[in-house]
Amino acid sequence: MLTDPITERRRRPPLSPRQEYEEFVLQRIEDYKNQLTREDLLTLADEAVHELEAGPDGQLVLTEVLVLEHVDRLIKKKLRLPGLRRWTNVHQRLRAAQREPAHWGLPADLPLARLIGRLQDTDGVVTLGSGAASAAFLLAAHDVVVTALAESVEAAEAIESRASGQALTRCVQVFAAQPGWLPAELAPALVVLDPMVFATQEASAQVRTMGALREATVSAGTHLVLPADQRGAVRSLAPEALVNHYAGWQVTRGPRSGSRWFIAVKP
Image (cartoon, rainbow, N blue to C red; front, side):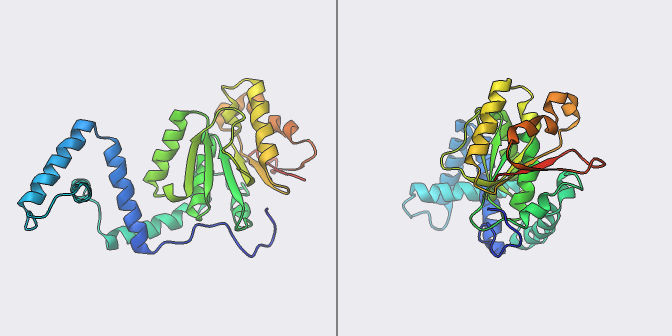
C-alpha cells in the first residue's frame, strides 16, 4: 500500500544499456512486421533465403530459425536503426525528460510525482481512460509497472503505439476494458482515473466501473482523479461529479487556484 516514507519500490529490475537497446530494436522490428501484409512477409523471407544461400555459409541447412533471424536483420537494415552508442546517448536524455511531469503535459500542481515516490515494491498501479495515458507513461518512465485500461480497442491501440514510440512498452500493459471489468486478481494500490472515460457511457456503466475499482483497491490504496480536459466542461464529467463514489474514503481536493483534481484514500 502507499505509505510515507518507503523503503522499497515497485520497479522493474533495471536493464543494462545493451539490454535496453536490444529491446528497442526488437520492438521496432515487431512494429514493422505488424504493418506488413502476409505477402510482404513472404517476400522478405524469400529475400532472406536467397541471401543466406548466396553467402559463405550457403551450404548450411536453412532452418526456420535462421531464416527468421535473417529477416530481422533485413528489417533492421531497412529501418536504418541507430547503433548502440548513438541510441544510448539519445535514450538517456529522453528517459530523463520522460521522468518530468511537464514532458507529458501534466498539470504542475498534480501530486502524481509525490505518489510515485511513495509506491512500495508490491504495489499494483492502474490507469483508466485515454486521458490517463500520460500519467501511465510518467509512471513507466520511473520503471513502475502500469496496467492501463482503455475505453475501446482503438484507444488501447493508440496507447500501445505511443508507449512503443516512447520506448515504454516494457512497463505498460494495455487492456481494452468493458465497464466494470478488471483483469483477474488486480489489486491496485494506486489508480489514476480520467473522468472523461465516462463521456460516452451511461450512468449505470460509471457505477459498475467505479464500484469494481473501489472493490479491487487494497486497503489504504489511493485513487487520483485527474482534471477533465476542455471537453470536460460538461458538469457531469467534472472530477467533482465522481466524489460521490467515495463515501467513507478520505478525500483531498486540489487547490482551487490550480487544476481540478482530487485524491481519495480507501479506509
